[in-house]
Amino acid sequence: MIMYLGDSLTRGLVGWSYIKFMPPEPHKNCGLDGDTAHGALRRLRLYRKTGWYPSVSVCVVAIGTNDLLQPHLMSLGPVWRLVFGWRRSWKRWADMGEYERVIREIIDTLLADGKRVVIMGLPLMQLRGYPEGELRERNALLEGLAREYGLPFADVLSAELSAVPHADRDYNWGRLGLRRALDIITMGLLPFTKDSFSRRRGLELTVDGVHFNSFSAGIAAECVREQL
Image (cartoon, rainbow, N blue to C red; front, side, top):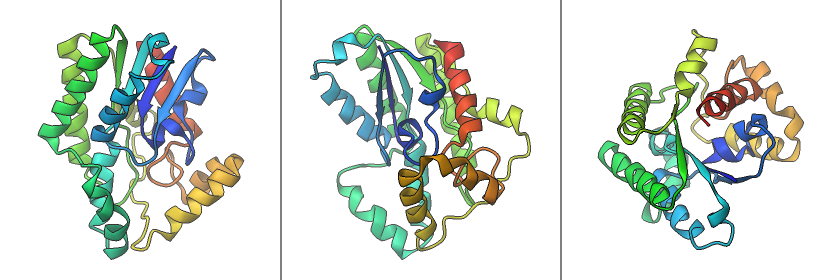
């Protein structure tokens, strides 16, 4: 069984999960909306105590987007600070040094349990003001860790930029986050509308600046398939 450890990009409630475009084989979608590297590590420790964990042979680790996204959103206004500020007490955002330490612990834990590990890079964000430089730094770190451990690395960002070299990156969730709230409600109730958000907003790779549309989810899935 394949275990997919990630955040909302893995879960696929808003936007498409790349898992939908993977071969139909036994899997466990361990994507959690809004989760961070620290949160994924904490969940992995819990999963190890479950009855299904021993049957996991491969884990795809795809975590870290929210460690950059949520601090960025908090800089946009008081509503975002209210939304994410209270989470700070129980879900830390990892800076570069912490991020490396947490990812190493996730990898070490999985390898010690006899699991094969695939590291998935962080994808492109089409969101205004998103720290793209830090995104590239973290992808370089993930690729370096994969090389150090001898693990496959799914370079989703490079594949996306190869497919859409001049992707627009200027969508804005606004100071109040109302678009985000409406997106969650609409896509949750009417999942068939997901790609229509991309078309209306002129976004080549995302439905809302962050989450995969079916095109980019397919790209991510192909990157992972090549490494499995």
